[in-house]
Image (cartoon, rainbow, N blue to C red):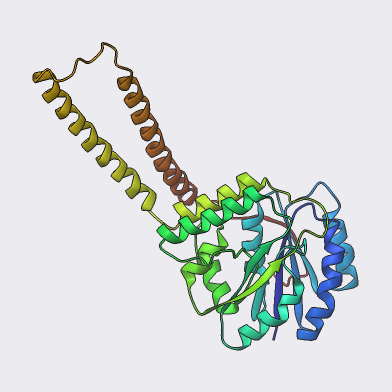
Length: 311
């Protein structure tokens, strides 16, 4: 068998050597025919030099460097497209995805599972805000999305070659791997594990904003429920307003209440309705923005340098 490891990296010069040190014995125990593909967004540090130094010692270490920063999702998809393994594992370089799980993941793959998903029981070192956003996001996505994404799973996963081929065929430009794999389908298995803290350094994206962006991709790219919800809000508010108007008319005709001039309720209702309108317009904007991204048809990534690949 050929095993591919896809590792998106950005500003990770301290983590690359330790990652390879721990991965070496584990991969050799599984198969000698493997490749480690580092998908590198251009970094201001020495990440590229460190990878090339490691490649000089072992040509199974490979490098994809992009012409500019395309982001982790696109770097992951590029690694999948360039991979050649019968099984492909996507994982982070910071060792929060334990290399020791590879043995169990490969065992599940050999049992016939096309997708093997490590599922986090604990998230050591992650702030409470990110944990809350992640847990809430999974619940909302699985409630309204057209596909089911197992909770507490990330991009860390093993995929068979046929799953990778189908994922690469997808034309979506958002790069939400969890949703794309769910769309493809096939037989899946879960492996529970406790996620450790990073080996070194800090995460290179805004935890809160990054989590929200991932969550929005899960909601808006795999469901139209938000549009339905905005329509329901519109009908409910219109019906409520009509009922309120009828009650007001009856009360005025029967002189049941003496309404004060300039009733603050009017201001409250106007502000409330204005807020609902902005929310609905924002939902439309999220969908239109994603349609615009797809229609432009720009390449998902542009490779500046590819070291270790035949093509």
